[in-house]
Length: 350
Image (cartoon, rainbow, N blue to C red; front, top):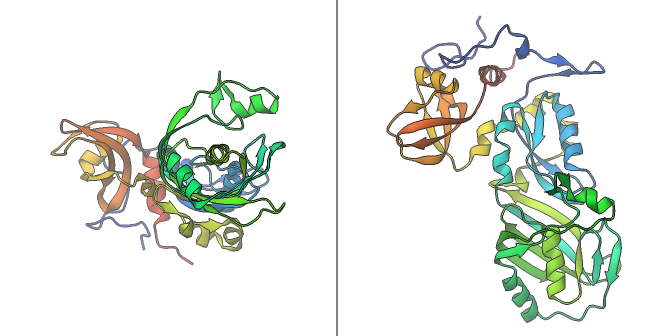
């Protein structure tokens, strides 16, 4: 019996008509990795709860290995000190990872008062200590209001931002301080509350914030400490949301390791999960094939800068924007990627 997935009308699922077909078929098959491990085409988004002490890239590589994925990328880094939501993109989903870089983020942090470090967090060397005077609820409310809304931030030296083509952290590691321009960011929501004593017995603050892209929570913690006249650094940082993805949706690495490969693959969200907020346009087979080949299509669509384009059966083709009734292609999946995604959705046989 033919096991190919059937599209509506009884046809076998395939890339839309008119799209350029891949030459041969070898790209559909898994490839051997050094050491004999077989990699395979994997497409989708894995929501990982990044553990403490692991870099974002190390977490990505671990998940990529567990899934035996050919291609993977993350959607912006979390410091090794930080934990929480880290969307990992595989295969076709990597084409839309930039959208998560643009998304708002939400964090929970703990700041130790009276101690400043070279990095703004517990990983750096202590550069200053001060006595901390009791902070009233009224004063905390004032500082909270001061840092809510549009603010200016000077990026930290220990960051991946580049100056003259070189990441700032490389200058910092060489003991060099370079001038950085303050940047505008937005703190959409901010809550500051007294916390318990730190491991060294110092007073702390609990900080909850929902922020725009480009906001450094380490810098926010330092600036709050400066405003209180005592300085501060972060001893804990957890990302609880990025865009519409929340930490409750995430899987931990130990849980992922304990699963079978089928269970791991079942956790993957489709690539269109990254296109939250995009308008949907569905094309028939003929127009879908031409669109996938990069041709503009005409229709009765209102102007829109963010459109997700589908063929029949909820098959994602890519992104586009609409101007004056023209659907203009943006980032597109390849026919081979579409074929691989459709094959992965076939019922699994024992």
